[in-house]
Each structure stands twice: as C-alpha cells, then as structure tokens.
Image (cartoon, rainbow, N blue to C red; front, side, top):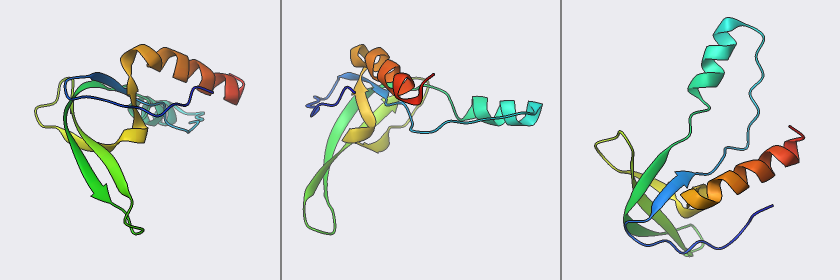
Length: 99
C-alpha cells in the first residue's frame, strides 16, 4: 500500500483518496446509486486550518476548491493525495480488494 505523511502547500493540486467501500448492485436503480457515489474529485488547496481533537492534538484540515465548485470545502489531510499519486493509490486499493 502507498502510505506517506503528506506535506501540502497552498495552491497544490489534489485528488480525493479512493473511498474504502465496494458498492454492489443488481438493479438499474442500484447502478444509478453506485454511479452517484463513485465520482472522483480533483481540486486546489486554498488554506490550511489547524483544529484540535479531544486529546488536544492538532489535526490538519484543508480548504479545497474542487473543480466545478464555487466555494471551498473543509477536508482532513488524510483524505487527500496529490494528483500524481492518485493512480498508484487507486491501483493499490483495487489490488487489496482483489479487483
């Protein structure tokens, strides 16, 4: 598996990491639901926000302006990866599933 400590900077292009889920379907409606939940997002980092958890540890969050969106949204650093690394991460994830 590809795991590393990310150090991002404002302006970096990122992708959303593959979600750890497998959606099975047998009907047309199930196919539509699976398609709606399997989109891949790409965006640009706007700002780093430090938040503290219950144990007072600082957690990095990033405001990401997703392509096609007008307003940025807040995401934990662990849910993001560089666009260049996305293909390898997705491949490793699928290999782990046996797909």
